[in-house]
Structures are given as C-alpha cells and as structure tokens.
Image (cartoon, rainbow, N blue to C red; front, side, top):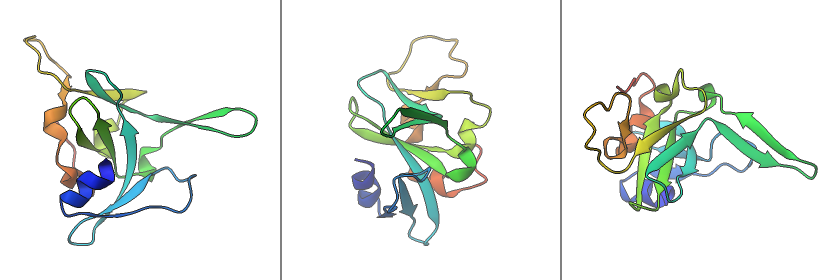
Length: 135
C-alpha cells in the first residue's frame, strides 16, 4: 500500500535486494532525492503505531533489534482503518524509547499534550528533508 501511495503521488520506489537492511524501500523524489523508508503496518487500532524495534527470526530464535534512526530517513505506516499511509521523518523519533502512535480519530479532550494526529502526517515530502524537525 505504501508503494502504491508513493507511486500515485509521483514518487518512484526502489526495493532493496537484501532483507537484512534497516529499511524496506527507497523513495525517490522528482528531483532524484533518496529517502530510506522503514514501512510499518498499524493493524486495526485507533492509532497507527510506529515501533522503534524490528523482529526477525532465524532457524533457532526470534531476534529483536532496536531501530537505529541514523540508518533510515523516515517511516511510512499504513492504516487499514483509514486505508491511508502516513509518513514520519526520523527526527520525530529522537528521544523516543519504544514507539509513537498517530491517533486516527479526533478527540474531544482539551488536554491533548503530545498526541499526534495521523491526518497531519499524510505528506511523504517530509521523508526527504533531513533537517526537518516536526512539532
């Protein structure tokens, strides 16, 4: 779904040959900028979650690895609830320990503090700005 969304928006996509890289695809802008993107799937929850760890397996066990944000440029997460993709620059993850969640539904709570709304993360252009520090 992320590849489809990026393609519809005019980006090109390159897929790495190895499954052992810290990113899942490379997004290419119209000006030929490259962005290493880690793709996530949010599941059927009210928040599109981006985890800062990856889980793989070998013949003996599962391996849990913390994502090094220096190895990627951003994250893309697909939500089956909205059928939309959301894009987060890696700088949004600085200081986070395990994950962030992008809230899909609006809230009536007046004390929203650090809640991030998915609707604010629909633009993949943020993946290409290495200095982008989102609010």
